Image (tube, rainbow, N blue to C red; front, side, top):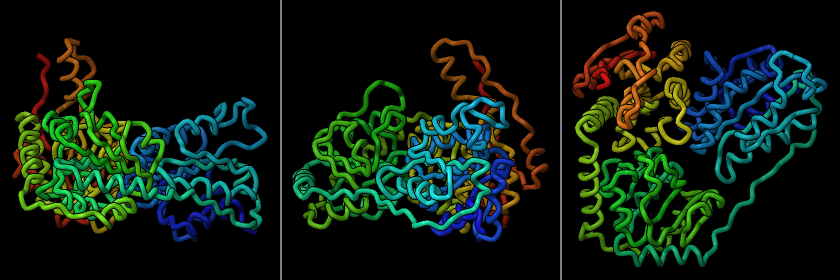
Length: 532
C-alpha cells in the first residue's frame, strides 16, 4: 500500500517537479519515503532559510516553481522570510511542511516544534495554505497550491501534512482539477491602447520583472513605437545594449524626467513599487501621463490609477497589441536619442564611487558573458540596481529590493545554478551579508556547482553606517568583524583569490575561475569605512 507521503512525492513528480530543497527531520521522514525512487533531485541546505532562498533562485532561472520540504515549527518559521521575499517579487514557490498530530493541534500540549496555529501563521504570507487531514485531501491541496503558478500573480504557497497523516495509507481518488479563470482581453480596451500608442509623440515603456519571459516582444514593441524602455531591477537584460534601452532605476532624476516627459507610458509587468520607483523615499514617483498597464493581476492594475488596464500574461497581451499596431517611422532616431541622453545623465547621477562599482560589474559581465548574477544588499548591488545593463534577461536579480532580506544571495545562487547547469553563476555578497548564510556554500560544494562567490569586503555595513552618519546618528553596530574568508574558503575546500577594486583585476580573477568545475571565491578588498 502506498502511503500519503509517497503519493505526495509521486504527484509532485507528475506536476513536473524535478528538484526539492530540504532538511529531513522527524516531522518529515514520511515525506521522504518515496523520494529516492522518484527521480526528484534532493538538495540539502544548511538551514531552512537556505532551502527557501534556493527554491526562489531556482524558480527565477528555471521558470518552474521552487519546492522546499521543511519540518513543522522552527523549520517553517525559518522559511517564512524566503516566502515573504518570494511574495514581494512574485516568485512561484511551494513549501511542504509537516505539522504535529491532528489530535494535538491547537491544544498547547507542549509537543515538539509546536506552534499555537501553524496553518494560520503561514497563511499571512502564503497565497494558499492547504492542510491535508486525510487521504482525500492530498490531490485537492496540491491543486490549490499549484493554481497560483499558472493563474494570476504567482507567489509562495504552502501544504502541511500532519505527522500521523503522512504515514497513513493513500487511497486513490479522482484527481481534482481546478483551473484559474482565464481573463479575456476586452477588444475595445486593446483598441484604445493601440490607438493611444500609435498617436503618442513621445512614448515610454516601463518593463518590470513580469516582462522578462516576453523580452523579444518588448524589444519588438519598443522598435515599432520608437520608445525608450526603462527596466526595473528584475527586468535588466530585457533590452541589453539596445539603443532604446534605459537600464537605470526610475528613482533617478534623469529617468523620472524621461517618464514625466512622455505623453503615453506603457507599464509591462511592474508593480510600480517604491523600491524601484522611489528608492530615495521621497514619498512620490514620476508622474505618468496616459498610463497603460499590462499585468497578470487585476488587483495590481487597480492599485495605481491607469487610463487603460490590460489583464493577462505579458507575452499574450503584447502579442495581441503588436498584431495590428502600425509601425512608426523611427528613422529620426528620436526615441534612441531620448534613451541615450537619459543613460548619460543617469550614469552621471551615480557619483564617482557608484560609477566605479558599475564598471566592476561591467568587467565581470565581459569576463563571464551570459552569466546569472545573484546579489544581496551590498554596495556593488546597490550601484547596479541604480544603473547596470546585463546581457541575459532575468539574469540579474537580488534581495536589495522588495522584501530586502539579507542572507539571500548565497542560497539563491545555488538554486540558480541547479536550474541552469550550463550557466556560470556569480554571487555578489558583502562581508556582512555573507555571514547570514555562509555555511550554505557547502551545499554548492556537495552539488559541485560552478558558482563564483564574490565577497565585497569593506569590513562592515558601509551603507547603513553612511545612512546613520548622514542624519546625525552616532554610528553603532555597523562594524561586525568579518571572518578570514581565505581560511573559510580553505575549510570549504574551494579556491580563493583576493584582489582590489580595479575592474581589470576583478575581470582577471573571474577569468581565472574558468577551469574550475565547482565553486570558488573571489574576495575584493574594498575601502573600509571610517565614521567621521
